[in-house]
Length: 211
Image (cartoon, rainbow, N blue to C red; front, side, top):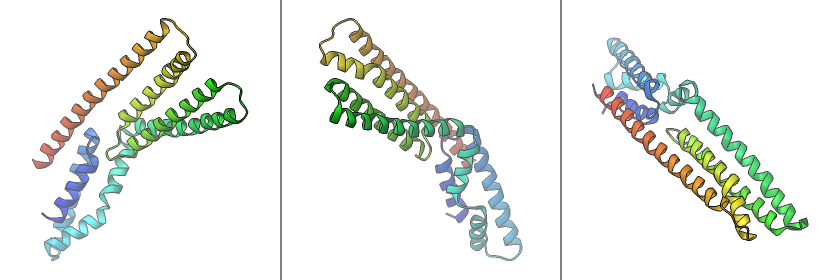
């Protein structure tokens, strides 16, 4: 395998999931690299050396893929998910700090526990969102799903758990559980659909590159 082919394989892996923007970049990269290498070969440079020079001048595949991520159509949801993840981490710090203060000086153990659980949930959701958007390719939909599910847990399940601990009764308990189940199923379905679409786009890019 030549240097150009190895570079294109790496770039293909890094651009997987970027749709038409990734395909265009892959096509432009291949055209540029082969043209640059052909010019060097015409000037008397050996083929292997000409390809190495063309790849070196074009730039690392990681940097090229990073440019596509920042300016491509998927950049906005990725940035939004990253911002949401950071916001959740900061909010988690506030809740955990408040729980610690309530542990020392508060008078309600139930409120302290609820505050601590909310902080832990937000911490996990924020961390998961950042991990998802920093993956290659970034899984912005997974980060958004995590943030949404965390919202359901914080707004529905945690108050429900506190109510159960205090012996509250009523239909709101069944309604809260049903809402959480529906939200989880919806997120699972969305994830499966997007995963199938991503795989089909990757297969289309592979066929295009092979052609």
